[in-house]
Figure 1: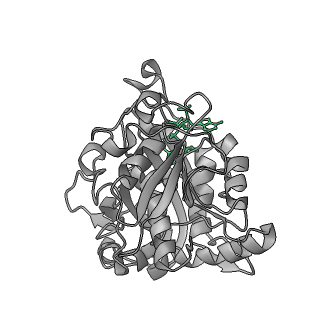
Figure 2: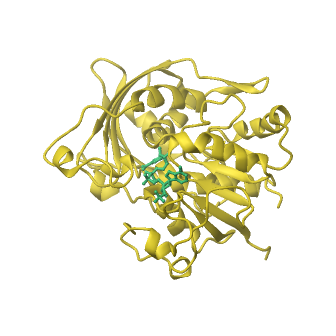
Figure 3: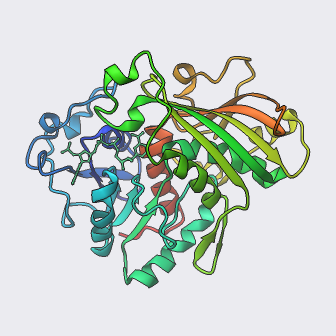
Length: 352
Ligand SMILES: NC(=O)c1ccc[n+]([C@@H]2O[C@H](COP(=O)([O-])OP(=O)(O)OC[C@H]3O[C@@H](n4cnc5c(N)ncnc54)[C@H](OP(=O)(O)O)[C@@H]3O)[C@@H](O)[C@H]2O)c1
């Protein structure tokens, strides 16, 4: 058995950082060797610096680890970044420039033309941008690979097989996004309880853009986005975890709900073929019940990595409408990033 690769988590004390710690603590290919956070946490025991919010206990091996400063030099070969957007931009570049592989959750580099915005099931070919990135930035070993926004991953997973089979012409999506999507402590309870907040800063722009980029094609070192429009309405609802989305689509080909269901159920993309550790089998769970998926009941499907789809029916305005649900801090954040790293490792793109 090969040695495990030593990995660090940037932003390790936050909502997404804690998920990374949970997912990486007993990972078969990666060994957690560094935890970094802000200056306020650096130098403290992880258990003291972090207000642990997950229902499973803090993994015993991280309790006494000392949180380090967020700067190159930390003891690992790859980093998973759960930094807020503003510090993420320069910090992730500094790590990549110093030779670290960077798997980022932050939005800072998602639109850089030479940075892959990746869902391993959807656009593994976009990893070819890593070579472009190294050429243009002069990085020999380091790189940045990003995963999408937490509501964009749900929509993109749902659209990928039906776009491939029938061609998507246009989409309207309405989200009901859990509170943990705003980090910790996030939305104040007096704003969120007994309420729906019909605005999440920057989210509709990300949800309109990112799926089209991931469903696009790499041409001459950058991505030509898929040629259809997405209209997004984003709402914060008082669920703890999970983003539920209602989706109406028009397709190039006229199809029945049963044909879409067959396309989702028969989808067996690369991470599932490679049987990667974090790849859910199947990637999409189609629920037959009239009132599923529901946020609380279905967000943990496939250990939080599967997207659940249901209520597939004809649409009076578009062609077909349905519901899609995903776990925002697992499939929408930490789990997505870990799967990106597993794919690059399986493809021989990580040499340490
Ligand atoms: N929550 C989600 O569902 C979700 C989904 C997808 C993507 N994301 C993205 O993931 C990132 C993290 O989100 P989150 O919800 O985990 O945020 P969070 O709970 O606010 O955690 C932020 C983390 O970053 C650290 N940090 C803050 N400022 C820093 C700085 N200047 N230098 C170094 N470390 C710093 C914090 O350390 P201290 O504890 O020391 O302050 C903490 O560990 C964001 O970019 C977010 O957009 C979140």
